[in-house]
View 1 (spheres, each protein chain N blue to C red):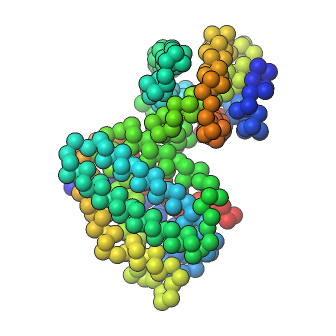
View 2: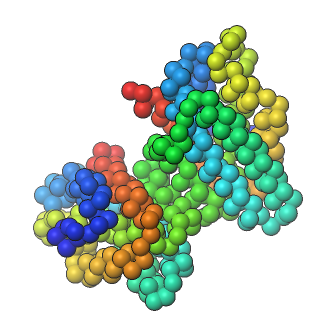
View 3: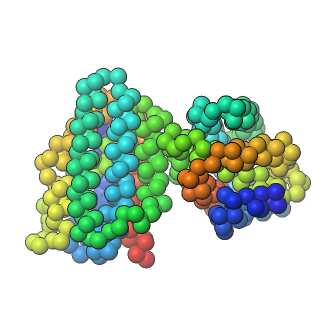
Length: 200
Length: 207
């Protein structure tokens, strides 16, 4: 993404950035050719991931000082709405909100929780930025068309982009030496998650 | 008792661990020394996290007797770390250069996530497999270890009465703190899967 091409966290991550934001799964979403099994797997696992992300954001919000806390709290409210949105989609497709958590999803959520509690809030902010900027970049590469247009629009729209911009500003306002390694670990989890949704 | 039920339900994974090429070769004395070196380096990293998980669980316990038990387990983990420091010196490992394998990282993150986010009973369910499994492996290997096995010290540590007693105490605390509920079963089984992956990682690195 052009806006973030000079962002130090992303530049220093090297090839991990592309690995985390480009995937066969996403290509198939853009082309409208994604097998329904892969879409269902993604929907169920991403829901379980979002539940973990909510806990991560809640702990991060509690640890972040004011006034930087405000966007994190707003993000927490957004993910609450997003869980409702996921539950509706899962229900419409006859999928479960209680699907067994795939080990790849589990490792990602464990990483988030371990970070939220055991690392300084500055590191959690960099991880939160990593989670969201990857999603923005991944979905923004796709044309909002075809059977998955609603999903593409959701994570490539201006509202979400503005939230990611604010998170980026928070990482600049609150630097920490451990941000880079945890940001890169976030990218690895993103990469592995996309692979899991595609390969099963 | 809950700890017996959990062990029995996961005996398949315990068997897979005992039959794992890493463990088998350790028992036979034929394990590649470099592979053992990589394993020890990762285990030192893991043990630090294990120690911290005991501490966080202890901070959450309402009953001071349980806190005291966790304090004793921490002492045991510190002793194990001392043994590792001996290995680290004798094997010439530079711990500052050690990066955790993905399997180590996953296990460590899991332990920390459980310790901080879950009640102490679930944390103990995540920690007990390591103790019980190593006592089991140590005893099994000791019974069949050939003379002059270069890994005899390692085997004797985990086959020893001291380690078995701590493992048994950890299981008693698990019984006291945990309920027979899905989160406990899930944490126990996932920890066993982490153990299996932990044995594989140093061999995969070799490949």
